[in-house]
Every structure is written in C-alpha cells, then in structure tokens.
Length: 402
Ligand SMILES: Cc1cc2nc3c(=O)[nH]c(=O)nc-3n(C[C@H](O)[C@H](O)[C@H](O)COP(=O)(O)OP(=O)(O)OC[C@H]3O[C@@H](n4cnc5c(N)ncnc54)[C@H](O)[C@@H]3O)c2cc1C
Image (cartoon, rainbow, N blue to C red; front, side):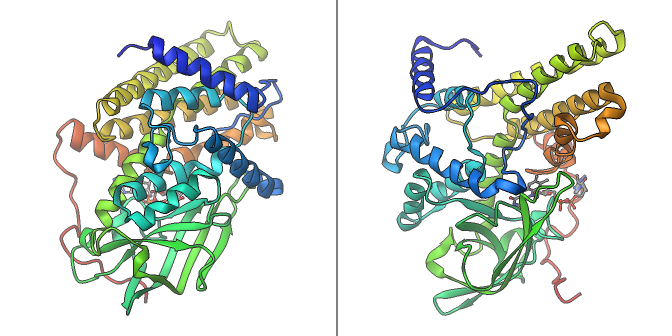
C-alpha cells in the first residue's frame, strides 16, 4: 500500500479542494464546536438539516461529485475508489450536511444498482439529485443480529404484495421518501431462503412511523409498522425468495461505510486537545492510555487502507469491512472513556464530550454488533469452526401471535 497520492490523485485532490472552497465554508474547528460522530439533525431543527442535506447533494450532483465511483451511465463520475476516498476526506473538512444521504448512498443505492431492474435503477437519478432519501427496513424486535429470523410477512395478492409486521431502529424513516424492506414471503422453507426484498414509498397507506428517542435526547430512528400496506410486484427487488442474497450486498457495503476512518481520527484529535487543556499531558497514566489509543487508531487506519486496496483491485468488500467496523467502534469507545475520566465530575454535565459519550454505544451496535463482527472474523478469517446455528435449516416459527 502506498499512502501518498499519485500525481493523478494529487491533481484530483487539488481540483476537489478548489471546488469545495468555492461552494462551502471550511469547518472552523473552535473548541466549542460539537464533536460529531453520527451526522444527524438535532431534534429542534432536523427539518432544516434534512433540507440542507438535499441541497448539498443537489449541488454535488450538478457538478458531477455526488457519486464519484458510479459509472457515468448511472449519473456518476466513473472515478476510482481512491478518488471517492479523497473526495470524502476533503469534504469532511467543510461545514456541509450529508448524513441524511448516508444510508441512501452507502447501502440502498449500491443494492438497487446491483439487483434492480432498469425501471428500479431510475431511482438512482432521483437519489443523486437530492430528491429521494431512503431508509433501510431490516431490523425487527426479534431479529437484529439474527436478521434472517425476521417475521414481517408479505402475501401475494394478484399483482401486489400485502405487508404486515414491525421494523425497529429504522434510521431516518420519518423523513425518508422511500424504504427498502426485507420480508418473509415463504414461511415453509429454512429461514434464509424464504425472504424477498421490496421497495416501498414511505407514505403508502398502512405504513405507520413512530419515533424512538435516544438517551442523547434526539430521535434519529423509529419503529415502523406495516398494517396491510400494499406494494406492486414491480417493486420487488430481486427474485422472490432471493432476499438474503440482496441483503448481503447491503450488509457488506454497510460494514465498510460504518468502519470509516475520518470520524475516528477526528475524535482522537479532539481528545489530544482535551488532554492538553486539562493539564494531563505530563501525567504518566494518561500518556500511556493515549499512546495505546493512538496505536489502535493507526491500526484502524492501516486496516482500512488494506480494505481499500483490496476493493480498488476489483474485489467485493469482504471481512476487512467487519474488521474495520470492529476497530472503529472500539477506538471511538476508548476515546470517549478517556475523555469522560479526564473531565471527572464535569463529564456528567451537558457538554460536547458527554454528548458524544452517549452516542458511542450505538457505534458498536449499528451495522452489526462487536460480537457478530468477531464471529465473522473467527469463521471467515481465522478459519475457526462455525458457531452452532440453531434453527438454520428449519422454517422460522411464527411468533406474531404470541
Ligand atoms: C445507531 C443505530 C442505527 C441503526 N439503524 C438501523 C437502520 O436504519 N435500519 C435497520 O434495519 N436497523 C438499524 N439498526 C439496528 C441494528 O442493525 C441492530 O441494533 C443490530 O443489528 C443488533 O441487533 P439487535 O439490536 O436486535 O441486538 P441483538 O441481536 O438482540 O443482540 C443483543 C446482544 O446479543 C449479542 N449477540 C447476538 N447474537 C450473537 C451471537 N450469535 N454471538 C454472540 N453475541 C451475540 C449482540 O452482540 C448484542 O450484544 C440501528 C442500530 C443503531 C444502534
């Protein structure tokens, strides 16, 4: 891996930096700035933030920067993965709102591009110009890590499917225009085989969205209920019964984006500032902990670089994504722990570090928990025996009546 830009990459970086400077303001990085890990709108002005995300997406698309890696016939720039990384790296230095498109661009769009019909791929154009925001309707009260055990049912009725069931933790469902859903279409076969994916407008009658408030005070995710909501068969993504294969495309992309570097590095830099401000830079214990953390941030950076190299050689995102996701969660959690301990009692008051601290457990859950990532690494990288898969080869019992 060569960490320096090639002459072509350096030229692309300069071009992007120039374009960003023309269209956005650089972040000020003052001590009062919040430390953002998940870019989501605060409860009191979320609507304004969503509009800002749409406007920024529109601006990027107008000048060809909305989808660096997508081929030009899908409206992308047809660039390389390194150009994509360079753009995100430069963009993260500017004060722009992007988070409402995170799931849409990082997970939903690649899945539609891979499995969609020509008609379904028309959504990509509307996504690119900021018109459509999507949510990912996978998790259910009884199906998170064991996603294939989900209970939401889709029944065929003529040219339509009728949906009943409940999803949970659906980020952005309350402002999303469309949802991408996994439902059980055949309960009589082993659980991974009876699933089908669908695309559904979120204002479909029979779709009810209820916010879930986190300990941060914000409500970025929701419960979503399907009570006889109907979708045409034309909105089925992939073949009937092929939902697990479609979902794997999404999950591989999710792990890779959830393990992104820029946030961990940004949070670590803020921690170093805090150590100095608190007069702890000469304290041997703090120095050891910060040095240990720095080593882990570097390992995370190198892991990601290795994953990027693999993808740039044309391979699908693989277990490196799980490793990057695991290390990102551990590094940020350790950073938050050190910060709160340094602050002592004032760490319990409302300030930017306590605000960050309460978001950090979510980093280790969303996109697959630490334990699930370890299972994947144990099986696929270390070649350890598979964990016992109770119920893998039998139909899922219907718990909805319990
Ligand atoms: C911030 C955030 C945003 C999210 N956004 C979305 C979204 O937009 N759409 C969506 O569909 N979902 C979303 N989720 C849900 C997320 O995917 C799930 O929380 C996650 O998959 C874990 O599932 P669960 O919460 O049901 O926990 P469970 O699966 O019930 O796990 C509970 C505990 O058991 C452990 N565990 C489970 N199985 C195993 C095993 N086999 N081996 C060892 N340990 C195990 C887990 O690690 C965990 O500690 C979001 C979650 C968060 C935190």
